[in-house]
Length: 465
Image (tube, rainbow, N blue to C red; front, side):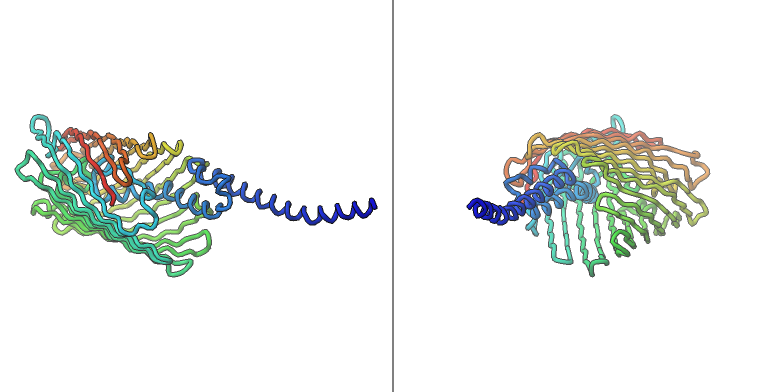
């Protein structure tokens, strides 16, 4: 009898233990998945995956990866996209709105931004020559986004109407349009085409090295890019690209000096052992053809760069190289090239970035052909609540002009720019944001009438339909 009872117990355990073992293994796999997500994707998104959602771990992994890529890459790309469309983005005119504010199924995203602003130096003049005015900024925008299995298309158009209360010319009208088309021809080959068109009428704020801020220095700019990526292996990529940039100014005196067309060809190899680390070497050839100004030049630039993620919070990108620039008139301007970017995510609420660059650029002064530029820029975004956040940024740029076209000019001149400011945005209802902000900018220039200080105060709303 004892033997029979013992055999029944053994039989029951042999039937029950495999099922229990399988359940335990499933639980272990689920817990491992949760742990890996929280460890690798960042604790800032750990709340997305809980024990109650264990059965949807795979789906949550996709969500985590998507959000992480947006935070790590999309954050900067979206900011860069906005700054291309609005040259005075830091920190105005549009606050930080990450892509995941929009539903992933959205393909048509209209928006409207309206602000009222007080500007104490609308023409960027010195001292007592400053002119102040209230301004109303009206910027409707349309964004189309169509992702397919192998093809993606993004289109954006934003006209900006700037009405001045205290200026003879009451209206400045800017236009910005952007198109990006990308197609995967297979698992190895991806081709992308994009075009960025800008019409600029309002005075530049902390002028870029090619942007003239003098009154009514209105211009068109178009930048077109073709890029090709080919996977030689799972970790090695061949990168090829062509781009051109075209400037056209309205005023003849400006057009004679600065109308030009630049052609750029690039080739590079990239090694990426994992999604967070990469190393690449790139060669770029540029030819810039001025319509009238005898400042045509050929440029050869070679760079080596890389990206590394230190733990969950810190990402670093470094690039260094050397550029040789030969002008048709016989001058040359050779210079090292460097850029660095640090991103640090302290918590889900607090994100920061710090940029540095050193390069040779086109000049905006008649007597000089080129300039060397040092720049540093910092930005921080803090979320008080999921609907309320603060953006603070600062920028400094130091320009040196060693290359001259006239013997009467001094051997070198300098021009430094500074800017800092911040804004607070609050989502009062779904996709409707209120914002208030302030911006200070300053130019300290050795060129005549090019120094100024400026204060801007603004408030408004941004509505995504």
